[in-house]
Length: 504
Image 1 (cartoon, helix red, strand yellow):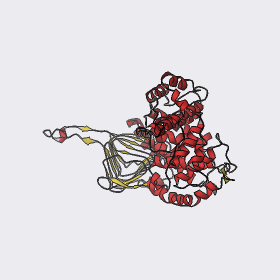
Image 2 (cartoon, rainbow, N blue to C red; image 1 turned 45 degrees about the vertical axis):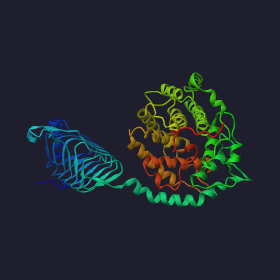
Image 3 (cartoon, rainbow, N blue to C red; image 1 turned 90 degrees about the vertical axis):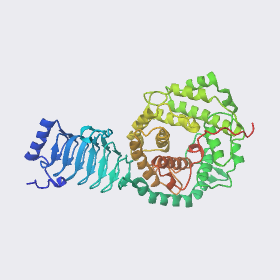
Image 4 (cartoon, rainbow, N blue to C red; image 1 turned 60 degrees about the vertical axis):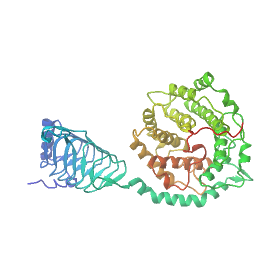
C-alpha cells in the first residue's frame, strides 16, 4: 500500500514524520547517504546499490527505480514517479525529472566483436545536469551528456549530445527546438530598437548647442561629446551636418592619451582617419617599450596603467592601419604576457575593482584590437566573475556604465578562447540586457541607469548602447539589434590584416 501523496511529495505538508525519518536514517546509516533540510524519499521507491546526496527540499517519489547509482542532487529537485536513474549523475538546483524519464550514465562495452557484450564489462563517463532544468516525461539521457542550466528536454527526447544553456531540445536524436534567450528577448529588443531608430537622431541633436556638442556629464576630453555623437549616429548609419571628418581631424593632438581613442575612433566611424600619424608612438620599441610598460603604476593604480597602455596600443593601431607604420608587436605582447599575474589573469596589484577595470582598458587597445590570445583567460574569467558579484557596484540600484563595461568586455573577449564558467557569465549578462532596455529616457541613457539624479548624457548613451551590443553578442542575440558597433567600443574587425599605406 503506497503512502498518501507518495506519488505527489510536493503536497506532503510534513516531510519529517517518524516513517520518513526512519527511511532517511536507514539510508544514512547503511548506505552513507546525506540529506539537506526537508527532503523526502518514498519508502516505496526501488533503490538498489546506490549512494545519493540530496540538497534542501528535494524528493524522490514512489515508483522510481534507482540502481547502481552515485548521485549528487542539489536543492529543490524532484525525481518523479517511474523515473529511472543509473550511474554517476550530478544534478544542480531546481531540477525537475518527469515520470518515465531515463537518465542512464552507464554503458555496456562492446568494442570486441568476438566477445559477447555481456562479458565485456561496463563503463561510465557520467551525466551532468545544470540548474533550473526540466527533464520531460519519457525522455532518455545517455552517458557522457551535459545538460546546461535553464534548459528543457522535451517529452520523449533521446539526448545523446550536450545541450547548451537556455535550450529547448527534443526529438530522436535530440536537436535544438528553441533558444529560450532568443525567444524571451525577441519582442522586447524589437520594440526597443524601433524606439531607438525613431528617436536617436533627435536625442543626439538635443546635445548640439550653438553649433557645438556639449554633454551633461563631465568628460576627460572636451572633444568627447563630439566623438560620442559621431559614434552613436554611425551605429545607426546616420549622420549630423555639423559633424564632419574635417572638423574632427582638427581635434587631433600629438599627445598619446585618451584623445587618441576618442578622436581616432570617431573619425574611423565616419569612414575617415586621423590626419597624421602619432609620431611619439614610433619611439617605443625594444627596451624603450618594455621600460614604458614596466614604469606604469601597476601597484598603485592598475586602472591608470591599463588606460595608458590602451592609449599607446591605439596609437600603434592608427599608425599601422592608416599610415603603414609597423610597430614592435612581438615586444609589446611578450612584455605584457610576462607581466600578467598567472593566478588572477589580471595585471597589477591591489584592489580587484581597479584591476578588472585596468584589464578592460589594457586588453581593449592591445589583445582585442590586434586579435591576440590572452595569457590566462580562465583565470581572468574567475577574477572578473568574482568582481561581478560585488553588490556595491552591481546590485540594484547600483551599476554605472564604466563598471558594467569593465565586466562584459573581458568576459566577451575571454569567450573567444574559453567557455570556462560561461553559464555564470551568461546569467549575469541577461540580467543587464533586461535592465538596460528598460532604462531609456527621451534624452538617452543615464551614466548610472537607476540614479534619477544623474542626467542622461551622450557619454552614457554611447556607452550603454555599446554595452548592450556586447551583452547581446556574448549571449548570441546581437543580430536582434538594429545597430552595429562603431567607434571606440567596436567589436569588428580585429586588426589582423596587413597594414594599408595611405601616406606618411
